[in-house]
Amino acid sequence: MSKSALVILAQGAEEMETVITVDMLRRGGVEVTMAGLDGSAPVLCSRQVTLVPDKSLADALAEKPQYDAVILPGGLEGSDRLSKSEVVGTLLKEHEKSGKIVAAICAAPTAFVAHGIGQGKRVTSYPTTKDKVAGGPGDYKYVEGERVVTDGNVVTSRVSTG
Amino acid sequence: MSKSALVILAQGAEEMETVITVDMLRRGGVEVTMAGLDGSAPVLCSRQVTLVPDKSLADALAEKPQYDAVILPGGLEGSDRLSKSEVVGTLLKEHEKSGKIVAAICAAPTAFVAHGIGQGKRVTSYPTTKDKVAGGPGDYKYVEGERVVTDGNVVTSRVSTG
Image 1 (cartoon, rainbow over the protein chains, first blue to last red):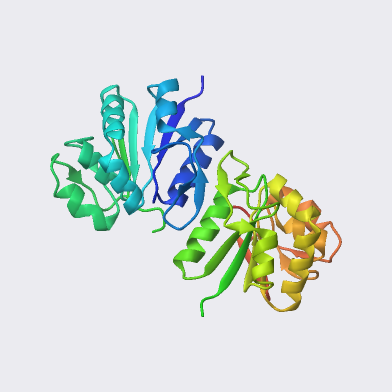
Image 2: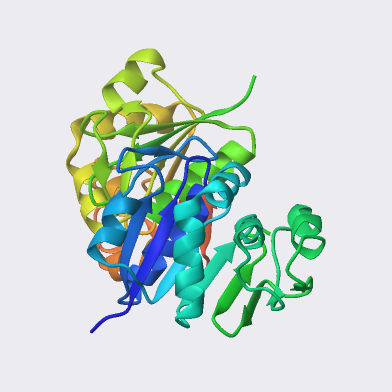
């Protein structure tokens, strides 16, 4: 059976980080669900590209409560919305606990901090968000010299465009 | 005044090639219009990501008949649709004649061949479409060793994922 991944799309997400992630995983044979944080309506991203989610996050979780990976694209506004979502917090915690991959790109590791994900682990993030991650609660081991940092089932990356 | 670019979005286009192009140009200060070939409705792309065009191609051309650059994203199905569109043929010819940039990514140079754009110029394309371009009419000088080939106002590129 092919692996499954849930990519959560919030208003103000980085469209490239969303689309490249979905596209590359689909090319690799992963069954990807691009789920809209606030429903199934089209989502305006950070550079004014509008993406249509496959379904709402609520529907995605109703159909399948756990995925092999949950991935958060970056974008400052999108990451802020992911940080404030209780649903996202709960599903990240459940996935982390089950040993599933939890991944965050660019500014999205700030949502990990907000929800207490990956505490004590090696992580990275978009450079301007370093203080929020390294200085936040959770005893993170902040890494600056790597584009992608993997510590167990926690994957974080720095930038899409650097 | 900022430069303007028209990115034409057809069903079956490569979503990454569309989104990365739009995003990077907007980051660079270019005023980008992502225009739907067949209207303003959401467009299903090659890896099942659905993008919402900014407006229809008809509206984009009604508002502004010429852009500083016209860019065709790849994708086999999308390129085929661009190849068959008379509107696309006419606008490419007008832009080429006016010295504006005409650009095609991946499989989309086949639409240049279909519409007689860039004849006699150095071009490249997605490797599997080489025969259609190098062997087609137009006396193209096919280039294999470069990712992006620029000859005057004609820009072609090979792959987004290679």
